[in-house]
Length: 223
Image 1: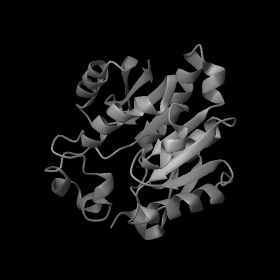
Image 2: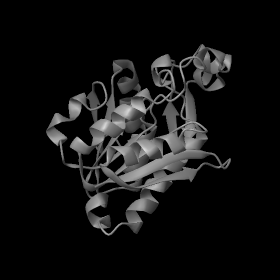
Image 3: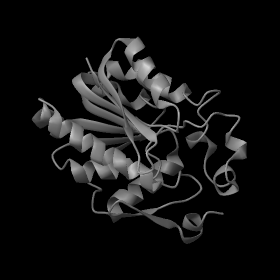
Image 4: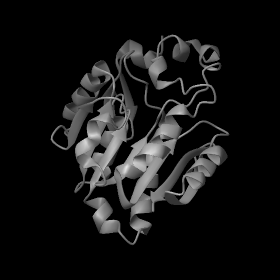
């Protein structure tokens, strides 16, 4: 069993987060997605609108990304979505424990299902979706394969099933110029950038490296 689950907490950015077998343990490399979002907002001609808009963390798990967005974007409204009630319970506890309970709205459902009221209104969508190919999941370190939720790991035959859904569906929910960003595993970024271009709904698709030099994140703007 991972040490973080034995002690029940982990540190991520400047937060102490409760974790359990119901949620993926937040990884240090995921911390970068918050810095990437902030940098892209600051570079945008629509910076003020993005800073004050509504952002969603899809598949929030422990709530780590939602908390990071809430802290980095103090004027924004943050939504945190997860299909798992158990995960949302952990995420809510983490928001309250870190003083952000009044900044984040938690919604239960699969991906965009709870977001009908925000169609066409979101300033940004950020996600660390399941991206491990199904055949690889059983071969992962036992601490991961046996003790972390497969729902948060298994990305289908090529690992990109959830990412394809996010690419196809997000344009109905993002404002023009809204930001789309995901975390991936090594080697997936070129395929995801191709899918973004192929959809013809996005501009400026780009990959950003993690601390180890791996193309870990892909971002784009809704046209």
